[in-house]
Length: 425
Image 1 (cartoon, helix red, strand yellow):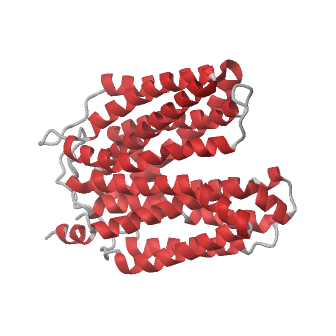
Image 2 (cartoon, rainbow, N blue to C red):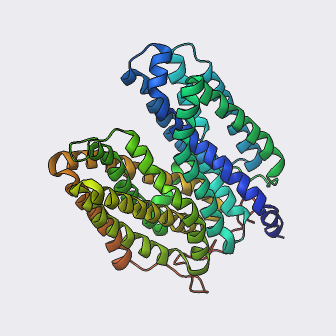
Image 3 (tube, rainbow, N blue to C red):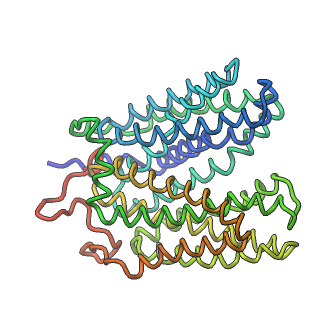
């Protein structure tokens, strides 16, 4: 006897919006320290370069959290696990806001990063708690929340920090996170505990899934290359705008980043299109969009008003293509193994962040050798690699309906469909 329908029905639109807000706050906790580095340096009497260790510590902690904690989403009941993570994150933020010296703040930053992986738990959880024909739309809504948190976190922390000091953003974030923990404790539906799995198996399964699941590898390739292109552009954009061509300060980069708020409106629409037509068509449009963005961004070498217009239009097109493509990739990934969505997400997000880190590192070096035009060419090459795989690679197995490009949930050679865990079945 299956109880798939009941838990799915409990994840209503109001709960999805609460989860999107939780994603925004969790992602924002990674990014808001970037804007208050100078305030931390002044408040703790250290150099700005030394204060930047707080940002690095938070990012290192986040990477550790993705690897060590996200797979546990396939082992632990979702509601108590998420509430516990949020409570720990709130406690770490409180500790950071009360830090008496930089070493204590760096240690608290690691703890904040490790525990603020809620968004990476929520995405696979939500995929299992809604019907397949709603999955893309829900993924788009959650991604909009993450984008909003990423865009607004710096503005929030810099404004509050300038008025009340560097501790205020940490303390305010702690209050919000703890309030969300209480809300989710009541709003999330209870899910049955999954079959027990050894923790070591959960950690190694991400690598095994990469080896055995071609649709996961395909999505990882798309996301790693395009996120690498995205990171190269935004890392080198500060060098371009503050260089001799434009002669601006770093605030210009922040203002340009706000243009990406449009993607908050695009991703839910992309999700609905993925639900109706499958992820492959969305990937095709997005990969072509990145190629076009590379050409538009190349106009930035002209400088002046025209160059700024090209940079604005190009970064907007790149942002939309990346985020809408992410919706398609996640929909494909979460359809591969309903019983292993946490481990699938671990593999997927690790590949994405590795691609982004490599893109940023290579982009700076390409910029030093060939300038902004070289960076745009680098973006075009990455997009062409992904597009070439999409057009010439092996076709994905199709569901009976002909939609999606990914195999039906639970379909395996010689196996009956596995009931989805955590409310998906």
